[in-house]
Length: 213
Image 1 (tube, helix red, strand yellow):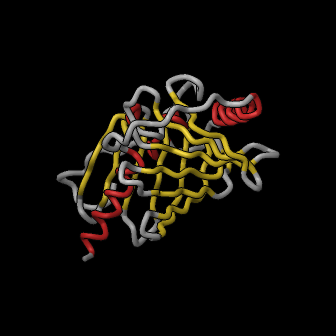
Image 2 (cartoon, helix red, strand yellow):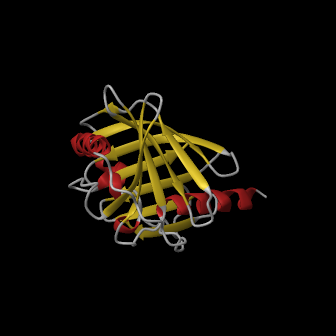
Image 3 (tube, one colour):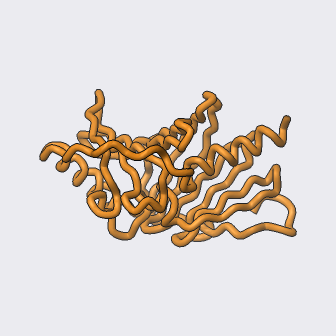
């Protein structure tokens, strides 16, 4: 049972990070209004301005299981999701690949960054109007949500990014896989920092080494 729970955690994370099997054909996307376009540009500008940040995150999977951890990001290209115990999952984007390591299963998987939804946050030049199809922009109580998919069909999972307004700030995202299963990540307040250790964004296959890298 312990191993099955760990395997499920990796599968959930893979649904967030990896191109899922093709969904049914998308319905035509209505043109964005000028107000929606302005929100998209505000979001892109905010992400572009982010450099080194860290904060806590809470992940809820489709079964309602909750995991927490610490999120680090060094734009462009680099991010780290370090899960709190009892989970022993580590996800690292190094600018080229996204690596997923589960120290319980001693499993290590790696995917091209460009084939994951994380590229929307980590691209050198954030252009939410190029290579990405914005399917909806919805106002919420204290901000707005941008729903998007990869226009090149390399990453077929759908991501919805949630922002506060006044000021604009990213506070989470959710991803829906091909089976309609949703994984949601909520971010705590992000703290800007210029002193992130570069080693945070290095994750190599630990085999045959034992233990967490």
